[in-house]
Length: 109
Image (cartoon, rainbow, N blue to C red; front, side, top):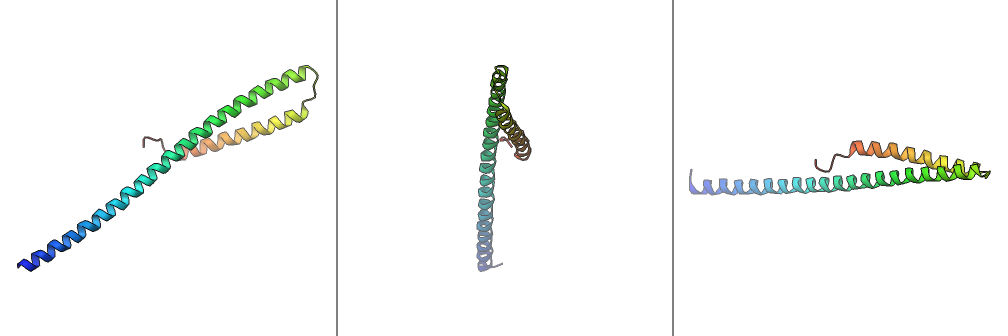
């Protein structure tokens, strides 16, 4: 092998090294994007779970107030129907949170 051949091989190796470094940078950037999305989704699921728990507590408190009003002879039929709708919505929300929770990996993955 002559000196020119060695130089050409080294130049080709440098080009390949640059390409590999570029690909590695793309992969690392994609992984960072995925990690950020997982963190955001995990936070969203936590927020939704907290709001669902708050809603459940509020529904229970409203139902207790309705019982108190009923014992005083107040017609609460329209309020009963509205609270039932909230309870149904909360149940659907709980189901949705469970579905999303099963898809989102734990934050430490």
